[in-house]
Image (tube, rainbow, N blue to C red; front, side, top):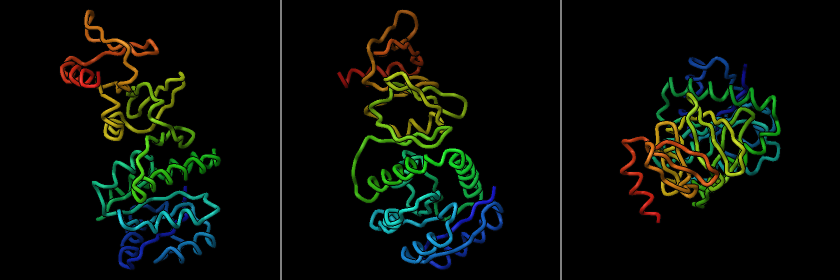
Amino acid sequence: MELRAIIVDDEDLARKNLAIMLDNYCPEIDIVGEAGDINEAEEKIIELQPDVVFLDIRMPSGSEGFDLLERLEDRNFLVVFVTAFKDYAIRAFQTNAVHYILKPIDDEDLRTAVDKLIATKETFTKHPENYDNYFNALQNLADRLVHNKVNNRIAISHTKGVKIVEDDNIAYLEASGNCSMIYFKDGTRYLDTRTLKVYEEILNSNKFYRIHKSYIINLDMIKEYISEDGYIIQLKNDVQLPVARNRVSAFLKTIKGKA
C-alpha cells in the first residue's frame, strides 16, 4: 500500500532528513508536500489530501501542531507525531494509541512506525467511520500534553479501529500473545494490538495491578482473595484469576493500603 504524505516541521533540515530516511527505508511513503508552519500546512493538506501527515510537535510550550488539527474540517488522514520529548510524551502517545517517532530518528523505529501506520490505514479504509474516534484520541492527547487536563480516558486500538473508553469501565486485561484482551464491566471485550506490558505502563497504578504475567486487574473489581487453593482473586463479576506466587506479598500490601 502506498501512502501520500506531507511533512510539517519548522526546521528545513529536519524536513529534508526525514524525507531522505523515508525515501531510503520506507518506499511505501510518497512525499507529496512539505510545510514549515501551520498556515502552510493547512493549505497543503486541503490541496493535496494526504493519507498521512508527519507532524513535528514541541512540548510542553508549543501547541501549534494540535491547533492545526483543530482547524481542519476534513480530517480523513492519519498523523505521525515527531518529537524530541521522550519521557514527557511516550506515556501519553501510548495511552491514546497514536503513532509517533522520537528524535533523533532511528531507521528501525521509523520502519516500525510506518508498518503500524499502513496497518491502521488498511483498517480505516474498511471502516472510515473510525476517523472520528481517531481524532477524539488526538484531542485526548492534546488535553494531556498541551492543556494539562487529567482524565481517565484511554484509546483502545482494536481490529476495526480506535475506541475511546473510560478506564473505570475496565474489569481486567488478559495477555493474548502479543496483544491484550480487555474485558469490561458490562461483559463486552476487545482485543487490543498492544501488549500487556504496555498497558502496565499506561494504566493508573493506583487503580490497576498486574497480578500475574497474564493478567492485570482493576483493583476496584476485587470481591475476594482466596488463598486455600493456591492464590486466587475473585472479581465482582465472579471471574476468578490467579495471583502469581512471587507477586502475592506486594499485591497484599497494595490491597491493604486501599482498604
